[in-house]
Image (cartoon, rainbow, N blue to C red; front, side, top):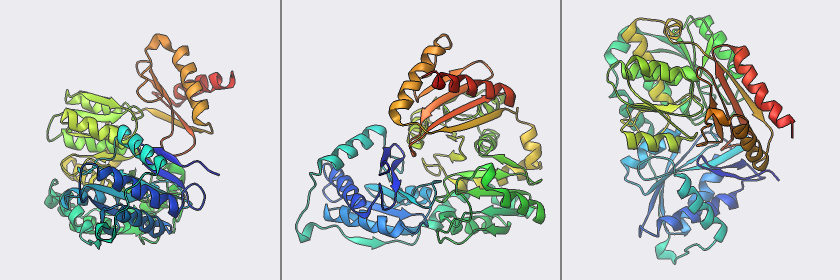
Length: 451
């Protein structure tokens, strides 16, 4: 049986194996039970991405929460940031997204949000795990069962909220041609709404929210050859790619070249800092490009462990102007404390309009690094052991132990950490050249091979 992963990214597993309707039902009871400790009649806003298993998990979770005395409002198929926005808009006690993000179709998950829209903290997740394991839930009489309602305003509210922070008139005047790959996920619905209001001529690939992923969902280079070809074919100004719950965004330039997810946050940071100076927050796995851009404006960059909740929480503490993660996740607290691909698209289009430059020209203006990312099949015990070996090997470089271990060597760095969402470990290195980054990767892998 596969492992049910419970982390700051929520609950994630394989349908019919590690994640079943019964498990979703029990987590619904656990969350509602925890809420009832401080709220007599809690309310939960819930939405899902387009996966075929979505209705099963959503309905099971909702039933469990209602049995434990929480009322549930179903938003239907919506993006993860939409759930965060609607949680605040409806003044709900919590938000829930039924999604496995970039994982393949056999996976699904349960991502839980606080009343302010931010993902649950690590301590709150541990409390939830304890409640789930104890199975000591409140079950009231018929008068105490929660209500079930629906609300269809999510997409419109999301689009309206994003657009108010951008110069829409300037973007509309440019009449950009854009190719968007929505992977037949939740972004298929609100993205055309947003881009239409920005005067975009849209070529929409995989734009039906039916959960039939046309390619492997993670928006990385090898999965987006079709998008690259379409940008060239249609002579578009830019190509965008979303993941199934539309909280991540990858970019293809006007020449059909995949420039990747790291540039998403970098370009959005540049656009934001051009208008106002302020702190930037990103995780330890994010490119040094952010530091280079921040240095232009003489503003600080604060690093956190990987995980949206960690980044958003620190942003709120530091009153940060913008933040996010190098996986294509952009966070602007004016919109919400969640990664948001709609926010990313609007920001990139505004940057193009403001500067009059192409994507490739903007990329050329940012100091380039080579990033190598490896996935290692390693359980958590093995990952913990290798973490200690890396920290000991590079002790003279004062390893950062906030999240696994990261070692900085001036203009290069390497990080090793266990994944929050899959039973693997991730190894990331960044340097001026691919050869230098590969050397860092090989040094760590040699430690693993040494037993």
